[in-house]
Amino acid sequence: MTFVPVGVVLKNEGDGWIATVSVNGTTATVHRVRISRAEHERYGGGDVTALVRRSFEFLLARESNTSILREFSLGDIERYFPEFAKAIRG
Image (tube, rainbow, N blue to C red):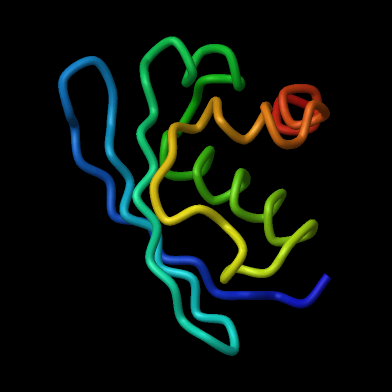
């Protein structure tokens, strides 16, 4: 896997967080990710920014940044990649 710089800006929002994620690949992209407190716990808890970074590392190992949805909830990843929950916690 090629290293792709990922920047994360996190904001508290209602029952969780909104992360604005910048991916500086061949083409730069920006993504908005909603993380509920329930998703945070489901995917291992800990530092939210680190969880978002690991999630994007997981995604970028499987597809280009230009293929990643521009706006989604963290749990949506598991709909496309059923192995996500196990991989992100492990």
